[in-house]
Image 1 (cartoon, chains in turn cyan, red):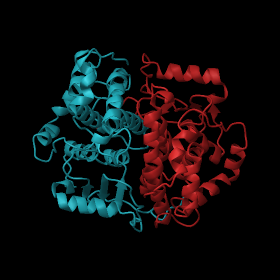
Image 2 (cartoon, each protein chain N blue to C red; image 1 turned 90 degrees about the vertical axis):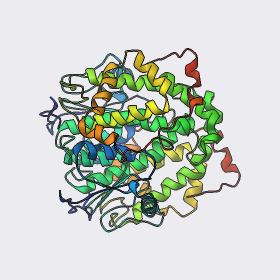
Image 3 (cartoon, rainbow over the protein chains, first blue to last red; image 1 turned 135 degrees about the vertical axis):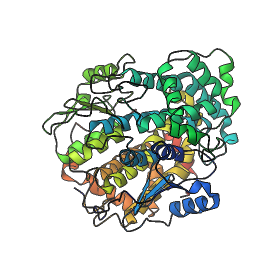
Image 4 (cartoon, one colour; image 1 turned 45 degrees about the vertical axis):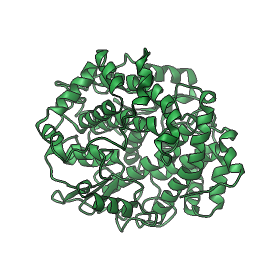
Length: 271
Length: 271
């Protein structure tokens, strides 16, 4: 059993929250933002001051940076600072934050792990795999230098992966653990509903024809109803209408029309 | 705040642990196995009875399966059963198990999140990305049908990704949060050391020339020392020598010599 020297590191509830992420894209930082926005909890978002954000990201991810007395170094943003605590890996930031923001039960309950299970699965399908549709070979290469491979990977995403993951979320919504109301788990909104919202929103930007066709199929109605229900949450609605919400462009969810060209012809949607 | 109907679901410490995973490969199930083996805690491993394992995986992942009264459905194995609890998503299973097995502090400590941060990052580099070196286009296609793309993706892994992630782990080991001894966090072994062990072991099977060259560079000595230290843990040593340890073959870590052909010529290793 470890006795790390950080074991006494605690967070006070009144410590300021800070989000450090690349400016100009929603990206993985957007999931963290949505939790704060829904909860109505203030957070400092460096993305609003682009130069400062870039400088902070570069300093945190510098290969000479080995962290500090109580925090290990981080490989990539987003980074959450909360008082003395520095955390990375977005799904990890979500499980740290969600119970504090009233968006998840605590880790003493099984629900905490069922929610993380759903979060990781939804992120696999609609964040990690969508990123790889335009960068299947190397993140260091430009999209234009892997376009042929991107078309092949996108075909598999459109025909197999998107229906498979949507079908899984639909099953989650039909399970006994999804209670009353449109939510994924229990009778009220959790952070995983926000994760799903962002994933569907981003994937619909990237693959509009695909998602429109999947929606029209009627096979995933509960998923798209949940998407709309999140969009109508007062705090989320107000956030989406504000200039704090970043437009899509580069990042995880990119729209390259040629990646959907197979959808022009008949698509064999397998679940 | 959610009030899921599973909120009172508790696990008793004497409930039996069961691991359900595909037989015949180490795969993602191996991380779960290593935690039980190091802790010396008994677990039922269905992989030892292949037909039963396959039947259980297929039943759990059937698209008509919507879980039960207290557990949502799951998309893919590994699956952990612990009494009434059913959990999937391997990194999620690890954070559920590790505190119970004495391999992580509880979720009330920041160390729990720092460990998950390291675990997710190491798994990104040496499990998820290694899988994609042989399947960059589609998991539904055979390797032979995406070999050209696999060669390109492997080149990026060999030259950029492997050094980048090894460099990050080396930094973790030089950080203040890595205490005395060879361990990643604190002064004694945690589950993340086991995660790293399996990742280095599997990646060394898949890319032997690459990993040998990276080891010889002397830039990642602390990483390879940790690997050896885990291998010498009495319980792990005895496990690795037993028939409970599965040989590599298919699955995440596969050895296709042609994917390392670029290592024959001079490789420009960037971190």
